[in-house]
Length: 123
Image (tube, rainbow, N blue to C red):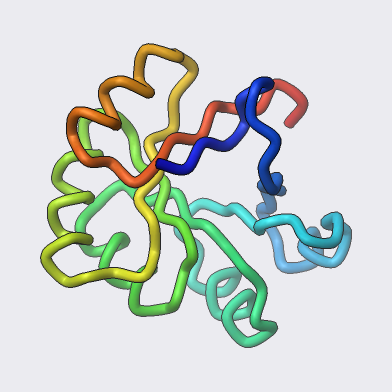
């Protein structure tokens, strides 16, 4: 299981962006993170940047995976459905539950969720 944003685990950082221009100001080796935005996704893909997308529906999940997102970020309610689809279609992208609660590590482990992203306090 991948764990991001936890003080105990050192891992690559996500940089949240809302525009293509903001991507140019991200730190090297960071992972671009955005809401589902076709222009940002297209740009990140064309630039061969690792990126994650916050998805809220099956359509956004499928389109983001097809666009070669590295990570698909989901809420608790959507996490099991998203993981089932990702497993069924053997997605390269990892499903990450977005959480503020350490107890969700156990939830992810029990339910086969690929990983967890703890919300960043500095964003």
